[in-house]
Image (cartoon, rainbow, N blue to C red; front, side, top):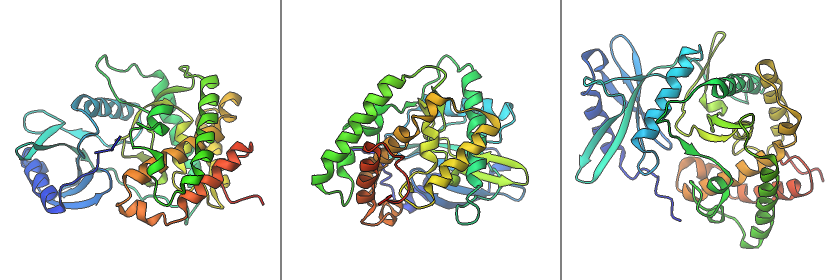
Length: 336
């Protein structure tokens, strides 16, 4: 399967759409519009005389209208529970998800959010930021387990097949750059082991539900004692412990990764609790996520993030697969 989720519009075309979008909102939201970043979706900073806002223009072929509205419903519920998250703003017609048209056959969904203040923690400054990450993740999990989702709620499903299968949401891991075909067998053996472990683990309500699915430090904002969480674009149905694996995405092979995992668990225990049956599955979820990111790397090979991984990232993944198959935690450098 060829993944066709990447934005093919130019920055100029996206700017046109963004300026078209902001005109659909009440006067108090009218202001300057500037491209802030373009990773998966395009995010624009909207600045007025009184405030700032974030305009998200969705990439094509990823979420349907109902999916986006379901994301916003969870954000509303999280906000009502006291967790600081972005909230969507309605346009002049009362719509929170608007449709923008550039030309015949070219349209995009867009959402305007209030601005969440705070600074993004980095592992370079304070690795214990992973404790804050673990703590807020536990709060999200507690909310997810207790929240009654609306009848029409629908979000993407992150299971074993959709993450690492040949027809996965982000493509086929075999297309990862710099991956030697001779190493496919090692990855396939790891995938088979993961599948067996997950089948035994199951997907009961105590271990599987609605999660953020991409809760890394880049999606955490800190201000005073307040922790804000952003970018719920990938939120969906999956195992709760997948959020731990997602926390160290791309960096599983680094020296500090084992400490990051421990910090995350320490933080999680401040608000929630990792049961023994969940704890023993951590290596499996970390390995599955790493292979999932191989698929992403292959389908996004031209992006700045993928290029920044260098030519050894796939080799490091193969090394982690060997550690996993040897019964070790697939993080950090080699023990040899």
